[in-house]
Image 1 (spheres, rainbow, N blue to C red):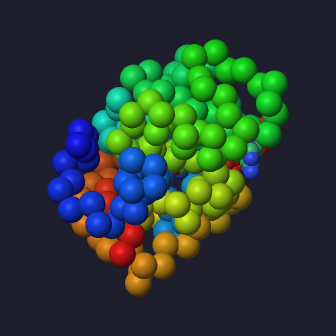
Image 2 (cartoon, rainbow, N blue to C red; image 1 turned 90 degrees about the horizontal axis):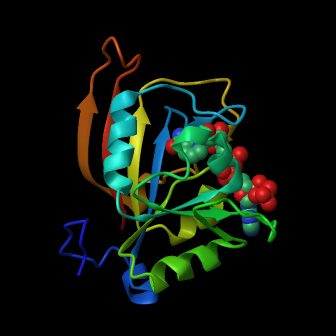
Image 3 (cartoon, rainbow, N blue to C red; image 1 turned 90 degrees about the vertical axis):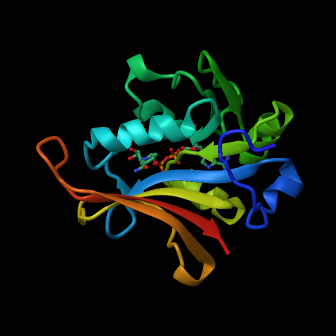
Length: 187
Ligand SMILES: NC(=O)c1ccc[n+]([C@@H]2O[C@H](COP(=O)([O-])OP(=O)(O)OC[C@H]3O[C@@H](n4cnc5c(N)ncnc54)[C@H](OP(=O)(O)O)[C@@H]3O)[C@@H](O)[C@H]2O)c1
């Protein structure tokens, strides 16, 4: 049973059969797939932070060591979620996290714990490594380009992904840019 996704047709998600769960990416990108610069995000968008929390709540979230370290200390591990941190350093121990040395080990941990939708939450290296495994993308598209970015999400080829839903949020005093919540499923 898929508890949080509310999806009935799972034909887009072969990982259900391989791992007993959907594997999703949750990411916010600029107009050119930018996701970060100098170890940090490129924008402050409170409604996107709330959206991220809502989507990932109750799930296993898998991230690279650098993304984990980019979360302000008082907010990590991310509460209400099982944090899995990937590092090549097998001696690394972040309190309150599952520390793994491969993405596959993280996937197995989530499967063994009965997860139904594993959330890959970054950053650039981990999205790139996991991209071929991803069934679904919870994408936030920020309608602005950020030339100083040094980290990017892989190209999302239009013919390989189906748009399931979109919601446009207009800029306001707390949100400098227009942005859009988009759900994509692999075709
Ligand atoms: N816009 C968004 O939605 C979003 C989301 C997340 C992050 N970000 C941004 O992305 C940037 C961070 O991304 P990043 O690409 O620099 O780093 P990252 O993907 O978060 O983490 C990279 C680390 O993952 C580990 N790793 C990578 N490949 C591995 C492998 N094959 N096996 C085991 N471990 C492996 C390594 O850790 P060790 O060095 O410890 O071995 C590596 O240094 C930041 O700017 C952050 O703000 C943006």
